[in-house]
Length: 209
Image 1 (tube, rainbow, N blue to C red):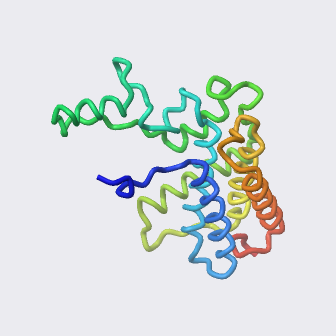
Image 2: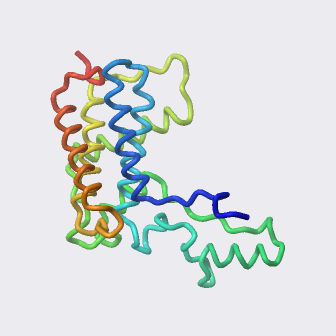
Image 3: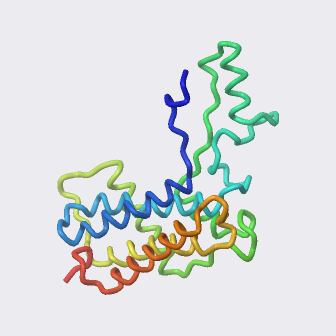
């Protein structure tokens, strides 16, 4: 089987892609309010990717590299999978643990998961906005009843908090510089700053008038 048969993820590339996707979808709400669900999904993904990047290469996260997670007995998911495949036990393959968005957000604020100087000190407004974003994302992903109404007032603040969170990730020393080019990091910071400024203006359709 050729390597082209697989797509190997890179959380740093996905983080940058997520930032660009979020920018596109949030700006789209200015032209079409029906873009709100996609903007919610995009902004939520940006927050989630920010958490994964912030927690990268820290064993306690159990999220950055699924195949390197340790199982009972000391073997990694990768090692156990190879062992079972070689023995023909295809129905017994281990399932990697995927941290929930709420768990990831909690971990980036925990000094046990991040060095004390890097643990995210989020103010109450940002935490509330990100929690609401998570709730809205769940509603969009899992069900969209025809009578569901989303109050637009406050959405710009929620989207702004997502970009502020991404910016905080980019400016955290432990966000490994060797995994992201200097220019890419700079461009990403500029994107965050532009979006934060625009959302502060409160002129888009994602803010009630």
